[in-house]
Length: 184
Image (cartoon, rainbow, N blue to C red; front, side):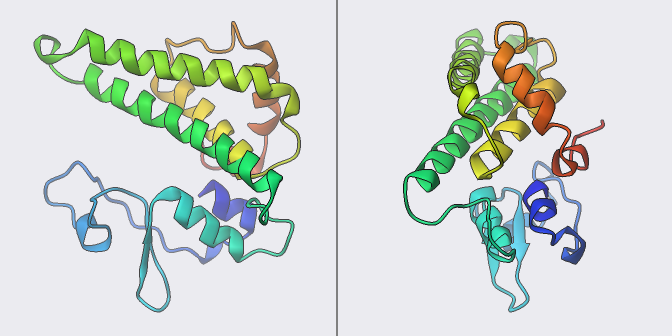
């Protein structure tokens, strides 16, 4: 949704609420992997996976775009996006493990995921001085840090990452992040 807002097409989308964890969900009819998001196009074809949908939505806007054309800026943005996506994947896996019964939880697995989150945030801090403007990598980085605040509130990433925290304060003020911040 943040990409749709940045691209100016959010109002053109019809949103459907679903729970991919509900056995009765029909999400697999749109995405055989059974994950959200999925985007049904006007011709009936379906795009799935956030990076694919984001690039499609971005293609609907006039340049400059969040996805740079071929070249070093594109690879830099895509690498930043991959780092942020990896951070979110690990944070989600850790959270899901914490939701299991205590006797079924794997301390090793949770620590492994937390280590990925920590290394990703450390890498973001190291690069924070280069974070200027907006591209898909920076947008995804901001979203991933907001996810940490929402789902792993005990992980205080700001304390040891002052440059990243300062940058996040700026990007979090963008309407695309303000309008998509989870509230509950």
